[in-house]
Image (cartoon, rainbow over all chains, first blue to last red; front, side, top):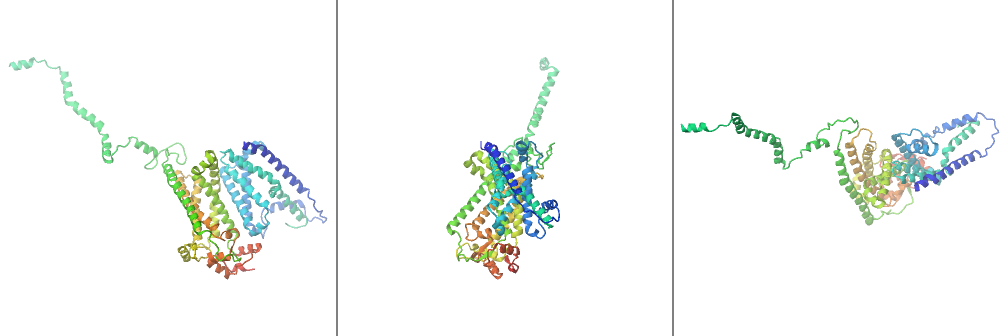
Length: 213
Length: 375
């Protein structure tokens, strides 16, 4: 009964909130007014935008020592989460049956284990660093902690339900997924969609000014 | 003469009858004896064994000994290719089951409950160990950001693995009465998956602990004195120590050694695809379960003294600072070095804290050297 509710009405409600919310946030970003640059552009903005999208994927020289922890733990978490989300066998089946109508070859079990270990270790380390580092602690908001904890709980409930032997475990996982999807558009989790926009905007603006940023 | 005639007059048996009689008379007994020998001779060894051992073994014993592969090397053959595919009945599994149900489960329960009872008794008698001199208001930096991150990373993993492991070991006895069979089944399934997924991360946490906490954890003569004074836990018997005391050093090495044992045995159990058979798996489980129970029991003491058992102790791992009086009462030699280095009474300024921790150079008893006071 509870599983039917979570996978039925609550799931559809969550999808609507997620899709509409994300679109609304993206439209809002593009509708932000920008000042007209009256100076002559020194270089093309598109090239700068594309370059910055790529180069911001690692730390700039001079910051590498202090940012190594974030770089390593960040990639551990994001790559692990991506593999779990897209290639975990239960997710591939769910996407095929409930969303797209087609699927793809899921990752073997050992890949799933490595990905989940990377993701769990990464998010734990990043969140603990946020709590323990005095500067990180001061600049962190409720949203940062809520997003980290909710994401962790979703991953955890998913892994606990891996055996697929009990509907109750699956229902708990689906419930947390729905909560995350509802929370997603109103949180900093939106960076999953806005990071290329942000990087491109900065890169294009700096390129027009002749700055290699 | 008449006798002769009279004897001749007696009708004699036909010749064939004479042969039969002769056979009967001469061969019956030997044949019966031979038959008896054939029947009895094979029983002689059993009779001898009976005489020696007092019982007669089942003639099927040899067969079942072969089937159960109790003696000698396994020489059974099969077309099925795989680890131990030529084993019909696993003997090690039975011994492992006996160990688990009759040794590990009850002994582990007694150890864990005994530890909890001891801590409860200690708390009743001693209460929270207070700061005798009160709070000085002067802070001393103790653990860096990286040390605290690694500590809590290992701690979270440890608690999760301990809880899920105990569910697998004792859930049948504790959770079924509370949750029912179905509820326990779901809990055990979740615990099993969680334990197997989080387990492989733990070795890396142990390695990180080794890297960040090894310095200053070598035993010295002063630690022996510390143990003789019961670590200063008894009133009126303070015990000197440096950056780490004897108890903390013992816990560090316990974490390291138990961590290695539990990680290696856990990986053998978790990844059963490298050709390890049941015998290796059973041995790994014995090591894993036995070490885990002792590890958990020891951690209860660590958790108690680091939280509610001692005033001012938790702050070192939560914020990285301790009060100077706490350092004086529990790590006096370390405090003396910190005072010499000008590291007592620092401001808890965030940016300065980062700078200071980046510059910490542990020497001597583990206190920061002069490098830390620059700027």
